[in-house]
Amino acid sequence: MAGSIVPLSACSTMEETILPATATPVSPDVKLKVGLVGCGGRGTGAANQALSADPNVELVALGDLFPDQIERSVEQLSHRHADKMDVPEERKFTGFDCYQKVIDSGVDVVLLAAPPAFRPAHLKYAVDAGVHSFCEKPVAVDAPGVRSILDSVKKSKEKDLSVVSGFCWRYHNAKRAFFQQINDGGVGEIRTVYNTYLTGSLWYRDRQPDWNDKEYQMRNWLYYNWISGDHIVEQAVHSIDFMSWAMGDEMPESVIGTGGRQVRTDERYGNIYDHFAITYQYANGAKGFHFCRQQPNCENSYKAEVFGSDGIGRAFASGIEYSINGSNPWEYDGEINDMYQTQHDELFEAIRTGRPINDGELMANSTMLGIMGRMAAYTGRKITWEEAMNSTEKLGPDHHDWDTIPDATALEVAMPGVTRFS
Image (tube, rainbow, N blue to C red; front, top):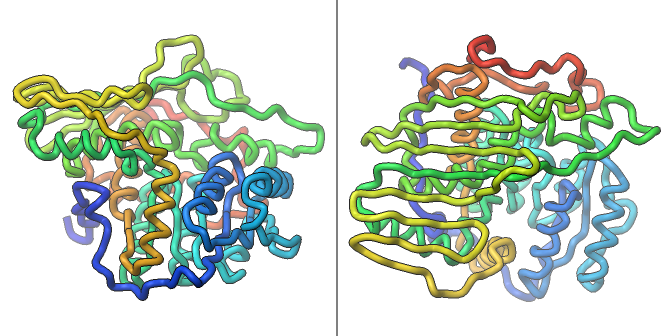
């Protein structure tokens, strides 16, 4: 197709994203300054891990839409890292432009943990400023956002910057060993990958007397697809990433799927679905089946099962089962690490040694797989990878501020067979 976007060629394992020593090493005597954008639970956790990853780091700036989030984060981090905190009032930034102020404050590393809709702009600004990044997943909520991420990733490589992804299981020892076995032919030719993310309900914040409609929406961002991408993109994308990892990060040809709202019928829950069932079709005939759900009082499941010509591999997110049954039996018996900590350990080691880590294409690919599944479920039609990557649909405004936040009452719930693909 003339003018079409060429599909990505992704790397097969996270370890292969470690590039040659092209950057200038940073002496252990040099203090690395860290900034945090997005001071919720995940952002605060990332900051804790970053401050634990290197003996000579300091948190110097925080940014969030809301000042109470910043104060809560500072309080929690100060209990653990009082000696690594230097965040005066003038480096606590609020508002939609807080990311610019955090990055401009002179940080060496920025932790990008605001809601997904804002990630493309935040990463672009960090890369343009020459700052290393920890970039939470997912990295966008629509195809234009993914394309922006890819542009930033290209520039980050040209600048020898490290970009570590929030696809945390790629830093888990057992998962690394398991998927290496799969990629090395442990189950033979892969026929099917079945992956699940079946959970109960997530958090919800009751409206407070001083919140207007826009603040209420931003405080409950999970439930609005223009901010979160819907839960298949925001949460269940971890399991879709398992599928992609098993398939050597080869992108599928097409996808079909369904989804809807069975328990999220109240307007409090915005316009997202509460379940999806998606089938990914690969060029070699293999299929990936993804099933996710956020409904209370139901059976939970968070795993990947890989069915091949010579065996079956199983990797569970909960518990410690990582095994292959068949012609090449295997079971993981090594150390179970803290994958969240390992992400930051490897990020700061990469900066110190001058050997950049760049997870950019991988995180864009896996995010796009989640978006592609949502597109198929929302519209009820078959979506090809090329169509998805070239989609012009933007779920939210081009520029984010209090004036551009959509009216929540005008946000429609997608209807398969009615909602159009664009």
